[in-house]
Image 1 (tube, one colour):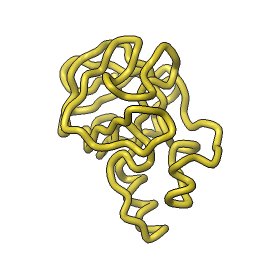
Image 2 (image 1 turned 120 degrees about the vertical axis):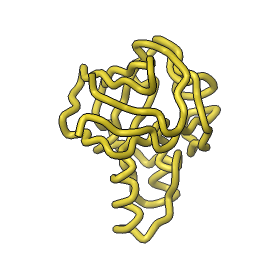
Image 3 (image 1 turned 30 degrees about the vertical axis):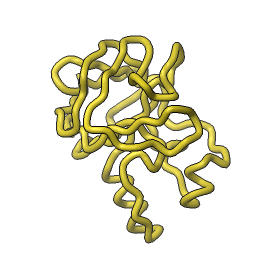
Image 4 (image 1 turned 90 degrees about the vertical axis):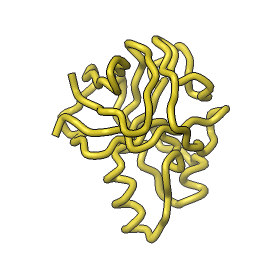
Length: 145
């Protein structure tokens, strides 16, 4: 399905840290999430993961990993990511728009790997830039546009 909801939003002050859940966030055009260490003038301003993938890894590895612990900014529930490609655009809430710039990334011994022994971003992470800013909240709709 090309629609879902924001299950969780998470940020961290610096790169290379596990993120902490927040109830809402401000997406800033061409920058990222306000107060998040990955914001800036580059293509990986916001990272999205599928909540179903987190649940699957939790079950397979006997973990209890929650929002932000895989270093993602936005966990999306109920949306099939398989139809998304580089250049796809996603609307979050009523006005914010992200564009997928990269799917997956180079794997390295990140804080996530060191902490849990498994990571999702290298294979499944959607790395995005902010096309249109706005305030997003947990429970907001998400759809491919």
